Structure formats: structure tokens, C-alpha cells
Amino acid sequence: MHEKILIIDFGSQYTQLIARRVRELNVYSEIHPFNKLPNFNEKWKGIIFSGSPHSVFDKDAPQIDLNKIKGKVPLLAVCYGSQYLANRFGGNVVPSKIREYGRANLTFIDNKDILFDKVPLNSQVWMSHADTIASIPNNFNLIASTKDVRNAAYKIDNESTYGLQFHPEVYHSEHGFLILKNFLLKVCNCLQDWTPNIFIDETISHLKNKLKNDTVILGLSGGVDSTVAAILLHHAIGENLHCIFVDNGLLRKGEFEEVLNQYKDMGLNVVGVDARNHFYKSLKGICEPEKKRKCIGKTFIDVFDSEANKINNVKWLAQGTIYPDVIESISVTGGPSATIKSHHNVGGLPKYMKLQIVEPLKSLFKDEVRRIGISLNIAQHILQRHPFPGPGLGIRILGDITIEKVKILQEADKIFIDLLKEYKLYNKVWQAGAILLPVKSVGVMGDERTYENTIALRAVESTDGMTADWVRLPYDFIAEVSNKIINRVKGVNRVVYDVSSKPPATIEWE
Image (cartoon, rainbow, N blue to C red; front, side):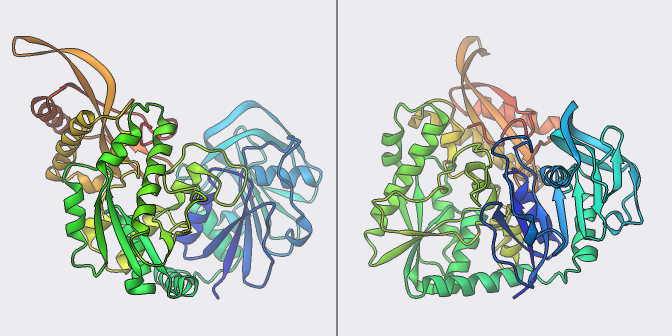
């Protein structure tokens, strides 16, 4: 068994980003909630405390038994974690007089400490906290400061225990990855023995032991997540895997036929199901975003229940769920994280279904899934396909869903995506799509006044979907997209471009 880093989740939305950074350094990590800690053994090489939406002053602030942790193995406490340790051992944690959120620069670094080895002075870090450490305990040594946060980092005497007031795991901490690397390799002495091939071997072995000769049904989407999940399952159980691709009436134009065609030579047992009318009927009159997501999810489950009943002895429903889906829906570990939005493939099955859920990719981010796909020799055009939400165009049509609206959006979206590929921009964009707004505006076509729909275009760049920035697409490209949509899509007379980042906006509009 390979080495492990334990990440103790206090409820931060960034907890899984810590796990991702650790795995990028080829070190295996597991996330466990603060109230459900695992048994410790020699394979635990180090521990990382996450941040938290809580304050150390909250009555229900997360608490743990430090006797089995502190001083036993190397420990890196981030944000709330660092405040928790400082407060617990006699330091002074107080509400910040100024808002400590966003970019800051390290004005002091103790480069003699290996945690900050080769980290330059003035390195940018990312702060995100309402409390601050006014003073540290006597046996805590200051090792980094910013202009406004004196106690930005500390180390405890005679222990490999560190605290960071900032978040090294986020992109905005420009040397945060180096700090984590120093902790893992120089403090914890990790061997970097976890790779995509190791994940594949262990996952296939785990699936074989878990599923044995059971029959599994899997929903394919044509994207990288479900495809990688399918190939892993196929290696584990072969013909016992039955793949189903559902046309929910909310796919991109021509996608149903294209997806079925791409799987012909992959050795998978795939069946296509036309359930468009079923979805349209269930969605009739529903406008509220969460209700639409839940309705699509329920209908999706109903379809799968019906299809499962056509196959003998189905015991499992497999899904291509990945970390960002879970993070934004519910805390994967049971920790106190905030729910942003529900996802159709997260949260379990209704009681009337007899199927159990298997999710081989539940612990991976999108970029990790792609690396796994490369090791599995999956075609590049599948691995580079933009993420497409499970609810499909249903969450890109604001307001109620009708067949007419779906057709308008399908046409506009196809023009957008096709031109991205024509301009060689598709692979430079993380995710792109068109949105049909519940807004009509006055226009002029020929000599006639029009009062028609508005299409919003969205294109973002990201690495993991947790944060994203809008793409600066060339003006000539946007001009051509707008012109073609307005001229070719009946019912549209205005096109706008979304220039908001995540956060504060989400990638999808609903």
C-alpha cells in the first residue's frame, strides 16, 4: 500500500483543492471529516487541516482530539486550521478589523525553514478569513508575514507542525504549490508513489472485488467522465456492464447520434434510449432552477429504473460523478460545507429503486480524469470534449422549457461550438455554450420591427471547474458568431457575451 496524506475537512469549499494539489505531486491523499477520523498507521505520512466556513468563536465550531495527531506526524494547518491551533494553545485570535480577503504579498519570510525553501520575498498569497491571529503562543515561531497579517505563518518548536493563515492550494497563491511540495517532500519525506497507472490498477482491482459477477448499468453522456468510468468498469467486469445513453431532449443538436457512433469501436455494450417526450412532459411549466434540476434528476432515475428492469439481475447503477459535482452539491465527507447547487447524479437513489451506486471517479477532478483517460488510451476528441452539464440545455434555458426553445438554443449552440472549432479555439476553452434568456428585445430586420429572443454566449477557462475566468475571445470571432446566430436562428435578434468569472458567478447560469 502506498503512502497517504490525511486531509481533515473542517468544511471548506477548498478542501478538495488541497487534495488535488497533493495528488498532482504524486502523493495519495484522503479526505476525512473532523468528526470521523480514521485509524492511524505507519502509512499516514502527514496531515493537513482545511479551512472552514466557521469561526473559532462559534459555539458549533469544529473540534478534534489533537492528542493522537499533533506532534505525532507532520501537520500543516490552513486558515481556520491555523487559527484553531493558535487559539487552542494560548494564542490570541480576534475578528479582523479589516477584511482579509484576496491577494496579499509576503513581506517577511524565514527562508531557513524548509517549508519556505526557495519561496521568494513578496510572493503573492491568497487570504480568505474574517478572523486573524493577533498573537501566537510562546512556543510558536513566526516564519512569514504580510503587510496586514503579521502572523501569516508559524512553526511550533520541536515539532513538524505548521500553520498558514493563507490558502496555498488556490491558484492565486503563486508559490503555494511550492510550499505544499516542500511540506510533502521535505517535511513528510513522501516518495511520490501515486500515479494515474496506480489509480487505474487499484480502481480496477477495487471494482472487481466490489462488483464481482454483478450486473451494472451505466449512463453514458459522450463526455470524458462517463467514458473513463465506462472503460474502467469494462476492464473490471467486461460484459456485465450495460451502458445506456439517454436522449433527454436537452442534448446538443445531433449529439444523440454522434455519441452512439463514437462508442461503436470501443468494445462497450451500449444502448440508446429516446426519452425526449418523457422529459418534456415532466418539465412542463417548471421555471425555478433547483426544481428543474431535481425534476431532470428524478426523470433520469425513472428512465434508468425502467431500463434496468429490462436487464436481468441488475444490482448497480454506475455514474461518472467527479469531485466538483459533489463539492457543489453536498460535502463528500460529511463535513459542514455549504451547498451551492444540486447535481442530477449526486445524492443517492430513491428508496423504491433496488440499485446500489458505484462511482469510480468520485474523488477526481476533471484534469485528473483526463490524465486517467490518456493512460487508458481513450481517443483525444473524447478527452478534450468540453464539460456538458447532466441536465443539459435544461439549465441553459432560463425559465420554462418548451420544444421550441430547445430547438432555438440547439441551433445557436451548434453555431457557437462549430465556429470555436473552425477558429482553432475549442481546445483553448475549458467550457463553452449558449444560453437562452427569458428576455425579448426590439430589433430591426429588413424594414420590419422584430421583438425576439436574446442569446448569451459563455466561454470560460479553468483547470478544475472550481474557479473560472471568462475567455477573451477575438472580436472578429464574436462578430461572426453573433451574425450567424441572428441570421440563421429564427426567433433570435440579439446576442450578448458573458464576461463574469467564477466566483462570483457560476459557469452555468442555473
